[in-house]
Amino acid sequence: MKNFQLYLVYVYGVIIAFIGLLLLLFYFSFNYLSPIIEDFLGVQMNLTNAMLIISISFTLIGFFFGIYAISKINSFSSKFIIILSFLFSIISFVFQLYKLTIIGPTWIGIELFGTYGNKIEAMYVSAIVFLISFLSLVISASILFIEIRGEK
Image (cartoon, rainbow, N blue to C red):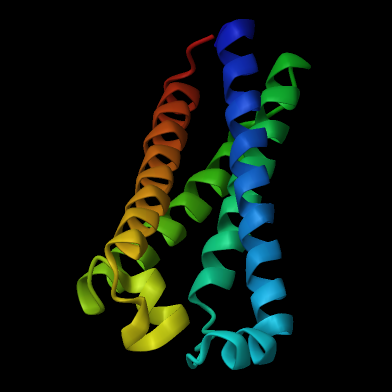
């Protein structure tokens, strides 16, 4: 891969890691502030591990994309790193696909707020998170294919 492409992979990895860290911050702040939010809004908050799994996988995908770009520029072996990124992308994508088929397109809202979360805004958030996961899967699979073929 060319240096510009590796730079784009690095920037994408930083963005995905940042999104993952934001989701982790969102999860832990909701976990900590859920009694206050429940009293203020009058809704029952249901914090499951679904957002935790997705946020950790996003953080690790971004981290491994960044490490891959740095190791590839420095001519180190990078197949193992992109395989790890690909595996976490598969885990995130399959988990979201499972939640999407079992709960529905507003699964993030339903997971957090129960029936109160069955709103169109929750569907938009779920779609954005799903598309980011799908894009990460496609990019990591493409890079893995290039690495296996041995192209420079």
